[in-house]
Amino acid sequence: MASSHIHSNQKDAGHYNASVNRTASGILPAIAVDRKSPSPLHKQIYDGFRSAILRRELRPGQRIPSSRELSVELRVSRFPVLNAYAQLLAEGYFESTVGSGTFVSSSLPEQRMSVLLPKASVQKPSGPRSVARGSLLYPAFDNHPAVRGWGAFGVHQPALDQFPFQLWSSLVARHSRNPHANAIHHINPLGTDRFREAIADYLRAARGVKCESNQIMVVSGSQQALDITARVLFDRGDPVWVEEPGYRLQRSVLMAAGCVPVPIPVDNEGMNVPAGIRARRKARAAFVTPSHQYPLGVTMSASRRLQLLNWAQSVGAWIIEDDYDSEYRYESLPIASLHGLDVNQRVIYIGTFSKVLFPSLRLGYIVIPPDLVERFVSVRHVMDIFPPYLYQEVLSDFINEGHFTRHIRRMRQTYGEKRTALVESLKAEFGHELEIHGAEAGMHLTMTLQSGLRDTEIAARAARERLWLWPLSPSYLGEKHQNGFILGFGSIPRDQIPGNVRRLRAIISSK
Image (spheres, helix red, strand yellow):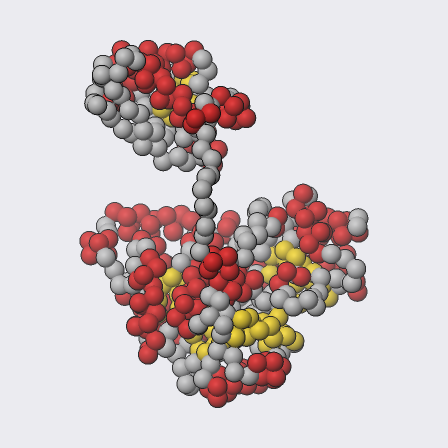
């Protein structure tokens, strides 16, 4: 059989705007041309396109190669290609724009396409469908309405309109044009030397972290850092202290590792270490966010920090410090890290650039005790070998040339103004009906409500009004919890805060 194949990337054209679709190169799925078949070539080409469209391998608006390009690819004359295209245009599967090219018709109804498929082409699961028991330990993905939109009160959403994208783009272009050959081929599982040196310099100066560059591992955000740390340190059944309330994805990592999360209450001094000792003294580790506790926003007191370090040393436990947005503090200088107080190398420090720059950057780091570096490297190498190269080089320049520090300084002022506007608006609208937590730092604050209100229901209702509230109650592991909302203020313009708080008040009052 003489055949030729072309493979589709199967990307949904709906994710791209029309201008991108109209300029993209033509792509198509596998088409087999059999010159020995009794079916004419134009009919084989027609059938190949029609089936690909009905199977949604080709999506509405996706560009099709020119007849000349396709004839070269299939090694056939242009005539059968032109005949096939003419038939597909006539039946409405294709549409053509003068000067732009030929595209899958954007008006094809999706429900009709599945009906037209031959029954034999519809794939259905059959036979045993077993999965690993370990995969069942992962909590179901919770696509909460609060994470679906961008705007008012969205958590972990920075002010992208203030980010220096033009400067960033020039740095990306610089390293795209002149890449280092050895870095493109292979780099250290820990990350590039230059980037890790820039991180170490920054952490020593700005966060009081005692580290060298050879202790730093570059990761894809703090979530991967938590995952690698759990794989290195924990065995199934290990009890681990977690903050109550706390970061839900952190608990998900522990549950997937088969650990037993032990919820330790958070008060106005941070994690209650004496309560943790009473609950499970010989825990394997403690996960904490001491600089700006998530979600309540309190700062761990000096006495609690020392209690935690003493406990870890006395029982041989580890402390995992997640320092996710400590750069932003509004009523005092940034609080030094817990890691800086550790004299026994019991603290594993995790940080991220994704929160303070932009979420899709997906760059974070772990500061590892020297005697554990080899173990972390072994686990990391099995997971994904090494981190991507390009953005490490870009961010190295961004830090070393002073742009990062200037951006943080500028955003600290911007977020401080937004935070003040949000606090004032909440007090004006709600008065004594609510309590505000954690407004002294970070990119979010938390408001707690009177009893009787269900925050998850209100958040779902608010999402329909395009207010992106993150409910507080799911942050609790135990049955006792508070109702409230975690309100981000990074992405909302300052002058729009009062109006959106009034909308929030109206939604809550409409219960």
